Amino acid sequence: MKYGNAAVRRPECGVERTMDVLGGRWTTLIVRELLGGTRRFSELRRALERISPKTLTARLRDLEEQGVLTRTVYAEVPPRVDYALTPRGEGLGEIIAAMARWGSAVELSTGEPGEAPTTAPAPEHRAPLTPR
Image 1: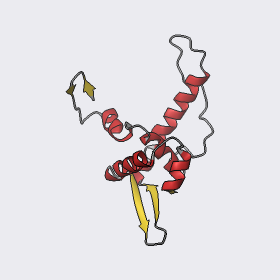
Image 2: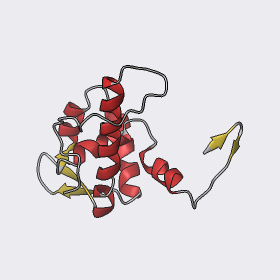
Image 3: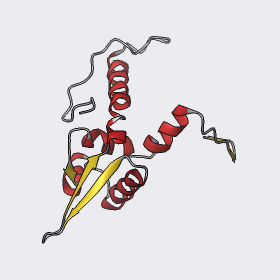
Image 4: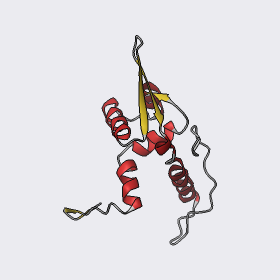
């Protein structure tokens, strides 16, 4: 994590390690989509309408390097590439489900100072938010 101009790393911090994986823009949403099963690049692009192809490619490479997803290339014409979560990536499902519950609760809260966003049910979503 960065504090001021100095980078302070605490590798023993589980939150920091998780943010190293999910902290990039779009990364959490890519994992959310893959929790629903194997996807092609074009399917991810359609699901994440505003992401550029360059950014999607970069995030997919990062997630592959971190062992969160696998990339399978098929020797076909035109080429076909599938992306799927590894068991390590599927483990992120609980975190993303908790984020979805929190986000829904905040949206439904009255906005009173100090109100805890914990009462809303998990939202309906196109991808299941629990590990397979």
